[in-house]
Length: 168
Picture (cartoon, rainbow, N blue to C red):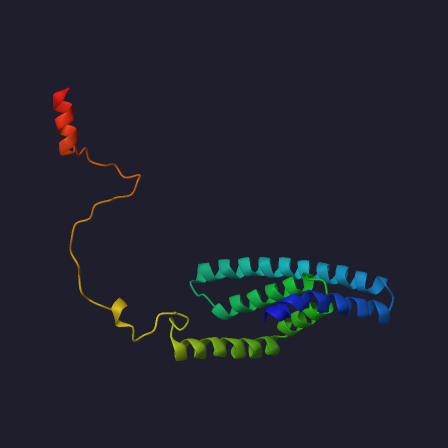
């Protein structure tokens, strides 16, 4: 995964360079500019539509989760379109196509749900389940005394100091 994040910008750059080699140098520049404008317009449209749907849902009292997930997917696609490069544009088109988006959602959400069900919420914990020293129900009672340097100390006079103060 880390290698993918490392090489992704280089793959995007390589795709734009290859587009420039196959066509003219102005084509990748126009492509990036056009896709940025399309992504910005799409993001503005989906934002406005989401606000209107939220207002309607608030008035009717019915909240449709699938509509908001679709709006979120379209917003992600718009952001992908705004990233310069052909790979991100390809992924944006895949996310924009409704049946493909739902298929990807079922695949990814199914994996997340099955991993959560199989391993539980504490699967990434480094504490083993059979370690009983942390699971003890024994209660310890006692007093404490703050010994930090910032703590206000009671005025305790040592017996030797008390004798010297009396002599003076």
